Structure formats: structure tokens, C-alpha cells
Amino acid sequence: MQPTCGGMDELPDVTDVLKEAEQVIRQCFQTYALDEVFLCFNGGKDCTVLLDITINVLKDIYKSCDIGKNLKVVYIRTKGPFVEIEKFVQEIKMYYGLTLKVTEGEMKETLQRLLEKDGILKAGLMGTRRSDPYSENLQFVQKTDANWPQIMRISPLLNWFYHHIWSYILQRQVPYCSLYDKGYTSIGSTTNTWPNPALAHKDCFGCVTYHPAWRLSDASLERAGRGSSVKAPVNGNGTYHNHSLTSTINPCIRNGDVL
Image (cartoon, rainbow, N blue to C red):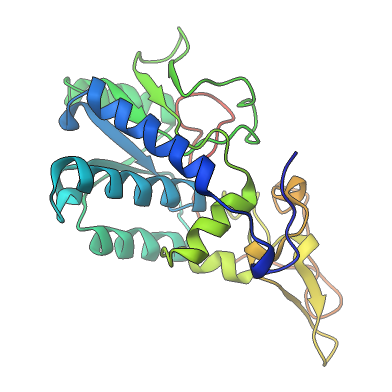
């Protein structure tokens, strides 16, 4: 059962799921060398948490404060990325001292090119959770489907729920994209992403504004702001139009998975 949240004080404890994620990441780097692993990053909340945990684990393993420069982090950009996402990716690059690889295109073809250019890659760290589409039966360590480029996908956050993610981010003051402060709860592209209607409220002037993402009480509505037909009201009537430049971050490794 997913934990619910009515406010910051009610965010769930992450001790157990964090310990589990750290164990999965440690096992990954016991099995594979650092340069045989890449982390798939799209600027979203889940992969941001995964990146922070991974950096902390690697700092402990290698006893190095600047280990981020040695971790292969791949940002897969498609057409027209959110300005806010692009800005955040650059902020994260500086914050963790990353040597970030930026690539573009459909995920399947992009992964194939990535493996062809970097032939020693054997595993990819993914920010997938079981509540993501088509992910309920995934394992922590699982090979990609037969019709995909062959690589081991490592998913340390599988058992994390929506509010675990926000509990970790807020309690540990992890940087996150500013779109989440504007009512976005699951970020894709401008054609399929809107502020979550479940977070809409009217201010004292009767104008519709949005609570931040962590205020979403019902985690099952995480993707309520996704879909081409979603229209979120603003200023009491009319339709919210997203004019930011955006991108659809393609599903990582398997169709439907999100980061």
C-alpha cells in the first residue's frame, strides 16, 4: 500500500527503501567496474534521487569526494526540451561535478549507438519504480528484452513510492527541477505534460494556482497531469497552455518505463 501525504510532516520514512537501494547499487559496483556502468538521467525526480544515492555510495566505496567526474551519466534529450529541465541538468552537472554525456534520439537507437561507441558498458542504472507503466514485475537486476540492445538494467528504486522520493529530496535538500514547484508531478513533453489538476487551488483573488508536487496526497494521481487531452484550468477558467520548450525523455530500456 502506498503511503499518503497531507503535508511535509507526514512524508514517509525512507530508511528501509534507502538501505535496499544502497545494497542494490553496491552489488552493481561489486559486479561491474565503474567504467562499465552508466546512469540514465533525464532531470526528473526519480533519477535525481538515484543519482544522489549513487554518488553517496561511490564516495564511500572509493573514498573520493569528486567521484562524480568518473561516473558515466547519460542525458538523453529529444526534440524541444523544457527550458527548466535543460537548466536543471546543467545545475546538476555542476553540483555533482559530473562529466555528463548528452545524446539525442529514440531510446532504442540511442542505446545501440551508446553501446557501439563505448563497448565496455555492461549495465545501466535506471530510476524506475514499480508504479511506472509496465514496471510492476521488474527485478532489481534484469537483462533488457531480447529485441533491445543487450545490457543489464539495474533498478535500485523499484520499491520506492512517490512520497518516498519527495521525502528523500526534501529531508536531504537534494536539488530538483523547478517545474515540480509549479504543480508538475510527472514530466514528459509540452504535448503531454501539464500541472497536475489534483494540485490546483484558488488563491484569495480567485485565480487557480498549483501546490508543489510533494503536496500531492494521493500518489495514484502522480500521472494525472500527463496525456495530450489534459487541460489544466488557470485563473478560474480557460485552459493552461504550456509554452516552454520541452522534450519527451524516452522510456529507458523498455517501452513505457519512465525515470
